Length: 325
Image (tube, rainbow, N blue to C red; front, side, top):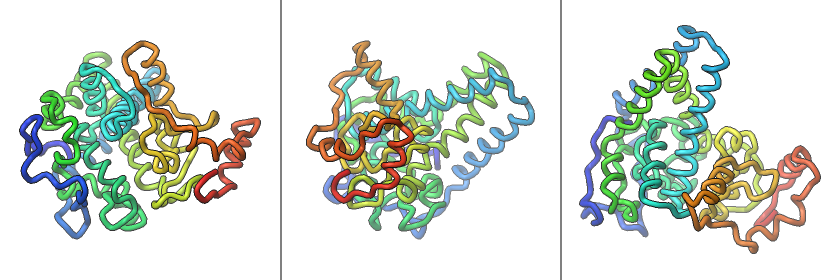
């Protein structure tokens, strides 16, 4: 189930006996293996219905709209900077307490725990767009890649063997095993702060938008956009999706060089999560941010330094490059 099931807990700090080998961790996620979880589908549907209902029950005001947007981007940061760039790719370092903050914040997005998310994402990179990819739109279509796979029984367990570097932290394992804890705390806090309007706009509507904002990277960023690098998959760069996801839309950049903390590599490639992490670096909260090596950036400099962001977007859309910009 999406959030309600209790995954098999590993022995903290020790690999589980049934964990897949890192060299052959092909995910068993496919429409023909398992079934859609009724509780997961119902939960998705309820959040969507309540989010839409909030628009009618509590008509829009500027404070409610601002709350919805802030709630969306705050938790998008938890997914983008936390779940993705930190837990999945180890693209920067931080303390144990802020590591927990990132895991908790990402969990409020109601997309399962950080360890579940990162473990599955590592499989996506190993098998991107091949038959063992978790959510390739080219292999199984838009519905499956966008939302079907995450409510399917074959994806519900945490793949502990893929995330051994974090299972030594009991608080992270606990969060992963109690996936409703952070969303409930977040929703209750919104209700106590602003009553039902804050709950509906700040949690239900914002979460609905946040789900689809996150999922479009799976379903659209392999079919819509420009390709700077000839990667082994069909990843693409897309400015509009980058704006929705704090920088995740520069997907072709990311698949070409996965270790970088930034995914927008050129000055006009907006990457909100990276800017926020640079701010946190100045405060000493995060450090050792992994940048893009000059050897990777060098091929881009000759053709992608236009005078305006608008011109840059046009260049990126018009130029399809093989093994460089």
